Length: 310
Image: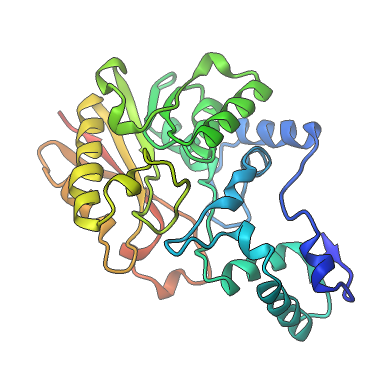
């Protein structure tokens, strides 16, 4: 959306920054995902993302550890005035997409993102299993749901945030895929994993400790275990171990994590899959960007997938 260069800060703050698409656009996006057979890694390859953007307006409520969110930053005149002046000083034309990115930067927020549905689709297809079951202990914004179902698999997931859970249900209803989806509005640590039956893949993007706060609800894991050692040892590690136990031989355990400051999420995942008699690194998936050559693989936002050997 192109903005009037003479827009005032008050007018900018009055704009609706959320994503809105027509039913036709959403169904076309779904069809594109369902027919994708070549899986690109560029940031502009986005089949299925419009559905995530449209159905999850609470995405903008994500807070950092200081309680700041995009939603709050957009209503802060000082932040929005700096964003507007920054844009006018550097560009001949203002675009809403640029303004969104600038708000994240100016407010000191991490640039939150949606899990790319085509990665989930690729994982399911590359296993060679035609109709498998994928368990996602942290459902989030629907990207893994979309990719799994588009591949012909059954998707079972936990999502403790009631608002996000309701939005997942709305998206499922819209697409008419209820028969392939089983959602539980419960924290993963309270879910009886033994009820899953045979699972061919576990795929999730767990919270990066307290980097992104999705809710102040007491059931959120970072509100129960509010320091890194406790969160790692009492929530993340038991969750990974529990999910591993449900996989069939040949199944894949896939975790989208990155290191955050001194918190070694990648190392935790690697250690829990380090029994080489039982686990083998199968593949790593992630987007390529112009900054890829400046980062080590250990710090990239990558989905690491391990195959169960026995």
